[in-house]
Image 1 (tube, rainbow, N blue to C red):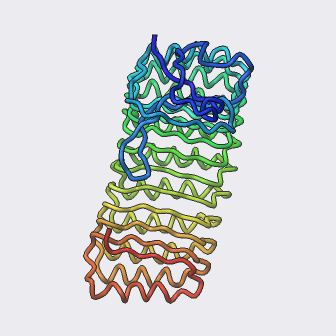
Image 2 (image 1 turned 120 degrees about the vertical axis):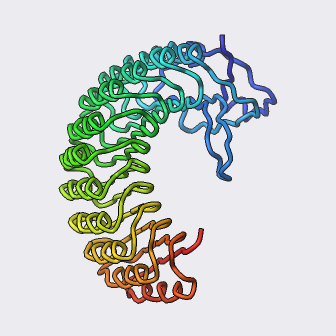
Image 3 (image 1 turned 90 degrees about the horizontal axis):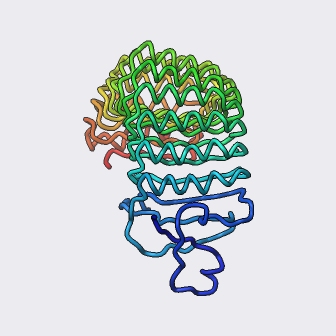
Amino acid sequence: MLASHLYSRSSVQNGASSLPPIRFGPSLLPRRPLVTFTFLHGIFRNKGGGIGFEPPISLLRPSDSPTRAAQPFFKIGHEGASDLGSALAKCTNLSNLTLILNFNKIGAIGASSLISALAKCTNLSNLNLDLSNNKIGDEGVTSLGSALAKCTNLSNLTLNLNYSKISDEGAQGLCTALVKCINLSNLELYLNGNQINDEAASGLGSALSKCINLSNLILELSGKNIDDQSAQRFGSSLANCTNLSNLTLNLFDCKISNQVASRLVSALANCTNLSYLVLNLQLNQINDQGALGLGSALANCTNLSKLILLLGKNQIGDEGTSRLGYALANCTNLLSLTLYLNNNQIGDQGASRLGSALANSTNLSNLTLLLCNNQIYVSQQLKIKSKCLKSKRLVLFEINFQW
């Protein structure tokens, strides 16, 4: 049986130099009813950008501040996941649950055992579950979907299923579950690096449209191909989320064409309450025509106040950059703009026109531009910066021509 440590406030305050080992399973939890439970055991990136790990920590009260002991990172495997599930199955009063278990070799069997416990936690309102890089596959995700469908009180859900070997079958099971989570208001769904095709992606959009209370959505689908028709259906489905105010879409390296990008954003214009948008379209197939279409579509998002638009590593030149700038200047309610145009084909003329256009933006007060790895001469960079600064409303301004 796998062993771990339980960190409690009393052992830290008493100056204990070593902490008693306990086993996963029912003994992991106290006898009193739990409302909040957090278990961290996975790889993370520290503030310096390096790779570290979270040792197994159980936070039994929100006020606890446990101390981490130095120890090697071990993988709990499917047996450890099953034991943890056995413990959680007894916590029927749980309303807040965080499980960070990435890179643990859990697999489909371990995931199914662990997730079966969630089906008994019907009072859950907040769930943060990270099973990324565990190869749980369609079987594991289908089990997860079945469990989530029973958690009808969920209002805040974060699911990290990156690189989980999920195909259409698993994605469909997840979609079926989300349709039943009608009380969701905040959803973060990370599905990068899986094998989900166009139809499943549009099905995901259809499922999300049933979450009528959704106000905040983060969705990451990078590393897959999205065709024109699927993008349009996906965007149209999101438009049915009439309460959506904050949206983050990560479509990095999705082979997105001009038409796909334009149609997707055009559909989002129907989200009349959308005020905050992060759109990552880096490393796609967007050129001047696509940049123009994007700008025109965004200009129709009349309530946008903050926009982060990432268009690096495309094929956008001077014409597209100029027209994008003038289109964004027509977003009359836009207060904050972050625009990444690095690694494109932009010269002095395009960058200069972009600066002039944005300087005419009516209410823009915060502006960040990234223009590195283009064809902009050093001698022109100060002039471009000066054009941006002609805006009388700018409070915060940053422009970078180099990394």
